[in-house]
Structures are given as structure tokens and as C-alpha cells.
Image 1 (cartoon, rainbow, N blue to C red):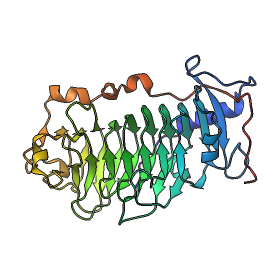
Image 2: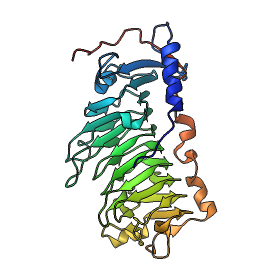
Image 3: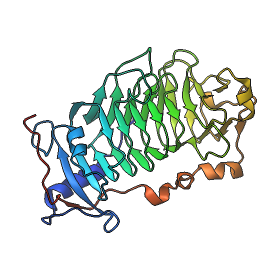
Image 4: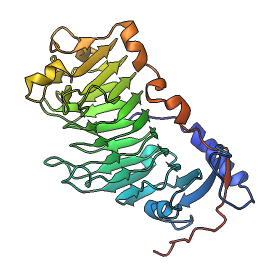
Length: 339
């Protein structure tokens, strides 16, 4: 069961959109006015600017310098979406995650099978369901994040194998529900997962994480803070995709889905000397460290400090708030209502 999120901020936002739309034209430079944004509406009924999310993204100019807020009305969007690298500063927002469903069915190459690919920097997603319905048997990514400074708030991310390819860059996930079985959070980003619900579909010893840090000089790794882990049977916390794989769980509830040993070296005992697998004040039946592998450790309070705030990813400087003012583009977007 996915967690329930408060929609008060989105309700306030929609009210603002309906009542206080600015009459001024022109793109709003993000550096000059970070609280303002260009509004683009996606509505499958044809009452918005576009009926497809990808068309709204395509309407944003290359080398974009403006905050763009794409408001997505409820519906099922059967789309394979890409946010290109030359289109930063985009927010895509629904009103609640289970009302806006972005879905595709693909498998194969981990970088190409994703339903939703974020290649741009300074991206925000709010209240979206992103899913790959392929199922078991192959790599089938729901969300690929390869841009820097990306935030996902109140989203549902669903697949089976390699659900979330948290590839590269600094990322923040808050109040998200992430579901899968095999290595379903994988990659080599520097990411903070805060108050997220991880649900394992593993029937045996598949791992929740497969972090790929390959050298001690890389400032990457996954931190799970105040999260919750549930599942259908049994699973491991993580396995070493890279020899310096780094994963920390802090203040996290672990159900009995977590196997006592906790971690796996991916069949290479040399990884045991270099991985960084740590836990701090986790609780629940799966958090018992008595039978953990000897090469994982419990952090001390001092050791845990760097992992307990957004400062670890610099998020205090780049995680964007909701815009408070909206303007239309100087050139109105071409509608695809009849497509």
C-alpha cells in the first residue's frame, strides 16, 4: 500500500493558478525571479495547452533559463518520456500521485528501457506515479535520473528489476513510494531518500539497493533517512555493484522482510574490504544487527552526523519550493488538443 500524502500545498497552488494568473507576457529568468514560473498545462481532455506530457516538455526552449511549471491533470499517460539535458529548470506536477499515472512497458538496456528519463539538471517531480509494467525476467527501469540537482516529492516509482536507475548527479527523494524486487534502487548518484517507503517484491534474497561507487574519491552513495521497508517475503538491504559501494540506513523501520545478514558482496569477497555499508538507530524486526555480515557496521553518533541532513547533497541550496507567481510565455505554446 502506497503512503498517503498531504495535498494542501497543491490545492493552494491550483487556487493560485485559477485566481492570480498574471496578465504579463514573457519568459521569467529563474536567476532574476526564482519564485516565478512559466505555466504549461497538460490535460488529457484537451482543455489544457497539451494532452501529452512529452509535448509540453518539447515546448520548452533549448538552453532554457526559466522556471517552467508543467501542471498535469489526472489521467493515465501512456508515454515514454525524456527530459533532455538542454532543458533544465522544469517542474512536472500532479495533484496526487495515484491520480497522474505515467506508464510504459519496456525492457532490456538499463539506460534505454526507462519509462521516464531525466537528463536535465534542476528538475523537480511532484505527485506522479511512474511505472514500467514489464514485470519479472529482465531489466525494466521505471525512472532514470542522470541529471544533477533533481528532486522527487510524493512520487510513486514502480517496476520489478532496476525500478529506479539513480544514475549520476545529486538527487533528493522525499515521501516517495518505491517498489521492486531485484536491485530496485541502483546506480552511482549521491542521493538522499527521506521518509520514503521501500517495498520489496523479492521472493528470496534479491537486494533493495545496488550502489555502484567505483573509487574512494567519488562522493556518491545512497542515504535512507527516516524511511520504511516492507515486502512480500525476504530481501537484502544491498549488494556491491561497485567495489566501493556506499549505502547508509538511518532511523529506518525495517520489517522482517530483511534477511539477518543484511548485505551481499556480489560474489566477490574483495569487495568486503572496500564497501561502506552502515546502519544507524534503525528499528523493527529486520534491524537486528546481531547476525549482520561482519563487514557492515553500526555508525556512532558522530559518524552519522554527515548523513542526517540535506547538506550531504547540497540540497539546502538547490531544492526548489513551489512557485508563487505564474506567467505565460511570450509565444503561446502550440496546442495539440486534436492529436
